[in-house]
Length: 145
Image (cartoon, rainbow, N blue to C red; front, side, top):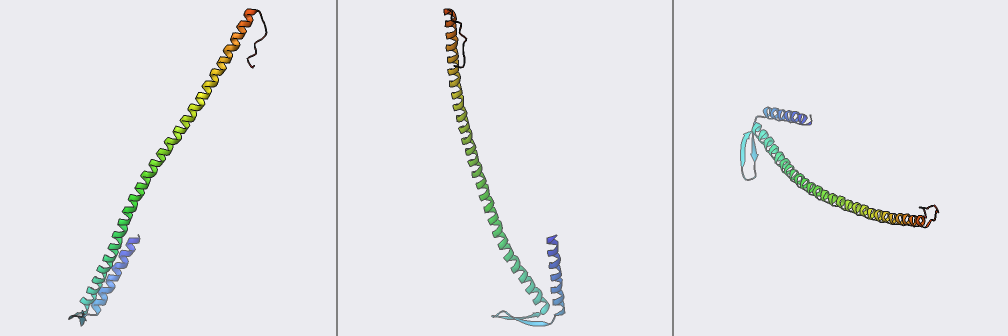
């Protein structure tokens, strides 16, 4: 919709310039500094309008090309930042996973050691009970000693 208004306004301006040129059709001199030419005012007005339009287009296109170049450079920079960021995230995830795996291994080793200690204590109590039974001692066995 925005571009349609631009086209409509441009078309209206062209019509105004053409009408202005048609109403002013007498011969006029134009001086370029080093030479002077005579021509109908209609051609001078239309020629001046075309030269102005060309200057505007050239100015706008160079600005547009610079903006496109800047956008491409920034898109490349963003892509490199994303790649670097993803690599850092991957490294940090692996680091945290290794830390958790090491912590789990430590806890498992502690658990296994405590379990082995409890089994040894249980075996000792069982051996003591058997020895007491063989000797005739009927004292109840206390597992919580």
